[in-house]
Image (tube, rainbow over all chains, first blue to last red; front, side):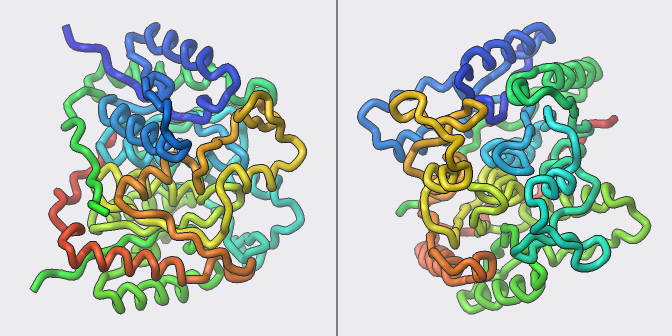
Length: 211
Length: 211
């Protein structure tokens, strides 16, 4: 019997008022597919007496260690205070991808990046040349028929998956787990084919320079 | 004589109308400090005949290969269409960090994440409990005295650096390179102490599942 595979639960869910409840629900779903869900909230970090900033660094280091200790990552890529995913989630997707972990993802908002950016920026957008659409800083908006920035999409597609899209009502935007469950089903199918495993080298730490 | 260290130039600079010019300017600055600057624009990808989406995936894979082939990364963390850094940049920071590369960063906008988010979201923000500040989705705004999401800050501080902040005029927000040059100076100092090197294992590819 082999140990159950561990899934790092990346996403802005940690910012929810009911973050613990959602993490529990995700862990329960993971268990139903015989995975272990690992949430950034599982960190038991004693921040008593630390400055906010030192607490932040402690949390960041602990999250990195947790990712290294997982076998795959499922990212909640739902747009967060922007047309794109949460930056912390994007960071963790890149981190996992570099380690050779499969990176899966879902979003609870429909539309591709260009469409959402247009909606958010409105009239300040201009089509400066055919296919080159710019914001007021003359910066292009990615126009690749992609759900989000191409690095994020590349991580999921490069892992052999597609980003699961499930447009939900606004009030369930960060809590609806149907798309998350689709990612679990996909992961379970790949596990049964032996395509996802726990054979990566673990916990080689990132380097810290002496100050 | 050893080969010059290679710096991956991460940032939303690639979206600028004068992206090539800025990449050249960054490469020139790198050369001045005896580094080789490597821009995502250096990719020579033939996208003729590809769908936009396939082109995107080709670019993403090429960028990942380029990062693996560098020795350190300097991220332009200037807020991009949100209170936070560009998500593609965040992804690349995580990617480099997981590989053990030093990750340095700068921003051309002052203020911490909470302050900028407050400014952007305005009245929809409430302090629900002491220290817990929420947006209209009841999602907390990070309140850690940090410039951006703690994972991003953790990457730079975990690399032994601090994010260089240089508040510039709006019209130079994405083109001013003074803070970038500060990162180079920092990197050069660490190189001379032998703290940055080219001794990482290279180009172990991320795994792709068969579909």
